Length: 148
Ligand code: AMP
Image (cartoon, rainbow, N blue to C red; front, side, top):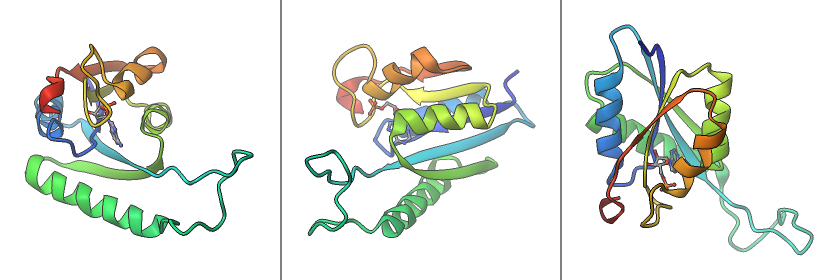
C-alpha cells in the first residue's frame, strides 16, 4: 500500500482526471501531497545570467501568491473532503517534482501523461522527463493530448 503519494498538477483541464486517480489510489491513513510548480524563466543576458532589471521583470512573490491561490481553488473544487498537503514551488516542473519525491520519501508519483507541454505523442515532456530518474513508482494517468 502506498503511504506517501505525490500528485503533480499544472491546472490544465486534464488535472481533474489526474487528481481523481490519486484520490482513488490513496489508502486511508496515507499522506497525499499536491504539488504545483510555478514556472518562471527569467530573461537571460548574452552570458546566460539572469538579467537584473528588465522591463518585463516579474514579481516572484506575486507569482507565488497567485499559484498558491490557484492551488487552493483546485483543491477546494477537485479534492473535496480529502486531507491533502498543498505545496507550491517556483522552478522547473520536472526538476522540482523529482526533488520533492526524493526529499519527502514519496512512494508513488501521480502525474498526467500530458498537460500543458504535452505534444501528441506517448508521454508529455514532464512525464517523459521524470520517468527515468524517479526513484519511486509512477502512475502516468493516460490523457488524450487533445483534451489536456
Ligand atoms: P506536460 O509535460 O505539460 O505534458 O505535463 C504532464 C504532467 O506533468 C501534468 O499532467 C502534471 O501532472 C505534470 N506537470 C506539468 N507541469 C507541471 C507543473 N508546473 N507543476 C506540477 N506538475 C506539472
